[in-house]
Picture 1 (cartoon, rainbow, N blue to C red):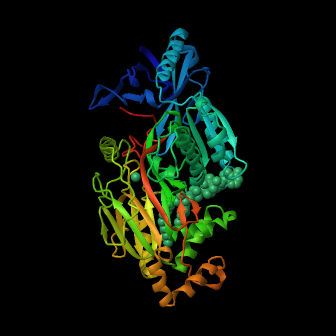
Picture 2: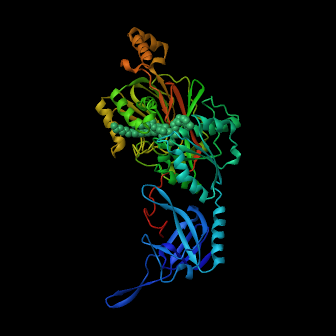
Picture 3: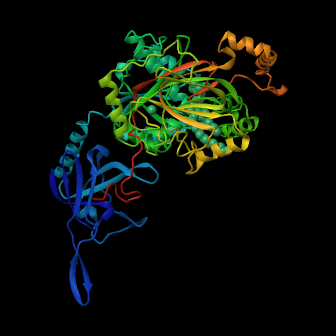
Length: 556
Ligand SMILES: CCCCCCCCCCCCC/C=C/[C@@H](O)[C@H](COP(=O)(O)O)NC(=O)CCCCC
Ligand SMILES: Nc1ncnc2c1ncn2[C@@H]1O[C@H](COP(=O)(O)OP(=O)(O)O)[C@@H](O)[C@H]1O
Ligand SMILES: [Ca+2]
């Protein structure tokens, strides 16, 4: 569609030619300005051409024309009122990129002389928007009113709901009444066919509830037994959106680039899709949990366990428990076995970062489905240093972390594994061996600086498809006999008792797993990555936000 001339209110004294095709809405300035250079008058073009991708238009509406106009923050009368010269107007709301991956909804108003033309513009833009089938129309929203600083409800009502309604996205909203409310509702009751997606308002724990409900429901509907670690899981049909209102918001931060509710709402509205790997966690052929970000034993498990008792502190509980756990300096013995991902592009220390449209994720996803590989956990893998493709490492560990994504968050903007990929079918297994407090502090501090946290001789990192961990005390009878002879059993039993009595100061022999911020009390687990099992309303982190802080959405 082509029309001219139209005016937009950002530049009220300027006339633009506005064009619309399937991809772009563009407005080009028609007016020239006279400039005097060494006594001669020259015509010069000022500013020029502006455009916004149709895919980033949130909504369009006819606008009531006011006889006043705003200039530099003050209302002024113009010599000729726009309402007289251009009595009709429509407003396009679109995505505007601000700093640090933040998106905002910005309005551009176009004035014209003819009412019919104005209506035609609105109708045509609406038609274009209706062709964008990736956009959700009806969403199921769960709000955790107790997540983070307990602002979930307010954040949704004040920042998100108005945007959804402007974009004509309808919603069914459930404010959860107890933990696991969302999970159970999704598993059993929710009429999923009605919706184009599920949105959670909360932190990583709330997201975890939603994926558990959705994945479990999908597997049950498809007759897949979740208890079998070898089963190929069926991908979920519904996309998931996260409105960050939690304490760490790592999943949101690592998939969008920022934990900002308006940005996430806009990614949902424009219908972005980002596939995500999911780890399944089993113990002896019993399904325990799914994880998409961090599975952490030792340090992060202990931080979480301690912090859960201090929920009343809000997000600051992690800082308190972080310092306390650091000072406690517990290490844990056991065996880590893993299946390295040898046939993939990328490695944990290659300094690449997973970004929008990531080639590594696309290629590895493709390779996996072509090869239709089935990496089965070899239950007979012995304690040898290398067993088939599996590698086995025994030792004393301060932390065992599996990062299936970077785990970037406000505390560590580059994350636990800065080069981990969202959808490459692997997880980065980070082993931090027992070391001095000062060395461990060096390692931790490097999460917050440019220095490489893996470049330390007590830290190693492997990109893997599967792994398992067996704590030392349940390794084998032979170990138990040896331990008994060494007088270890008493200490061990004592430690087991003292786990529940931290005041006595004994060193516990077990940690627990931090599974996306939820405590997993089992120490012995086996983990497998399911490539691209779920889809988020996100697009990964945009490499170079185009024209940051521009006054208009996109300057051509
Ligand atoms: C002395 C300086 C220490 C600096 C250490 C910085 C390292 C931070 C890495 C944090 C990785 C966080 C991974 C994400 C975990 C979340 O899933 C989990 C739950 O989030 P939520 O549901 O939103 O509450 N958060 C945590 O486990 C907190 C870990 C904090 C560790 C200090
Ligand atoms: N209404 C509720 N009351 C209490 N706990 C809830 C409720 N809804 C969800 N939860 C639980 O709250 C926990 C933390 O939620 P989350 O949204 O991740 O906040 P945070 O980031 O502060 O941990 C999750 O384990 C979730 O299951
Ligand atoms: Ca991954």
